[in-house]
Image (cartoon, rainbow, N blue to C red; front, side, top):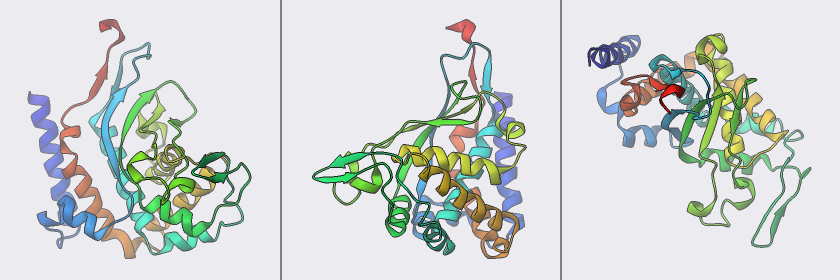
Length: 259
């Protein structure tokens, strides 16, 4: 109980710090309705955190790691909503090549087909989903994700609620902050990469898209776009910490000896 109270106090302190960094922020700014109006694209977050039941050792996802993921979510949403995102996608049009095959209602997509960058932007921006985040040893090199149907092919043809989205991503069984050198500018694109698999992108397309996110993310964090988007990033980070505060009350723990 004391630990939960301590963590909740840290959560409140983090919101206070964000507000002090930008005193124009108000509590109303953190409502889901106001945030979705300001940032209509890529309405994505976490449904829950879990640890693979196949792990052999005592494993935790700390509150700090969960906050790290939510910070990544905020950065990704700023990137996808940015004015620069469509142009960045279009600049890679010659590299946007399908690595998957799919078909629906007479439409087909084959490996090697070129993607239309405008459609790529549209089908990414319109994603609304909360994903499961898991700590797993399935890929100790990085991340894995359930591959969904090709949203590129099916969006606008198949009813949205019938397009299968892979609901799960998994990341290395290690503390995600030191493992990624506490560099959200690198970790957020890895998150995005796995979410591209969730909506049906294979390689090389997913690599091209996460590189676009990486470059824009660094420009927003510390480059020429920092002043332009600093307030929005603070605002979205505060929103994610507030909206998903119930995920931040305690560590997620898996003890294989209790199976």
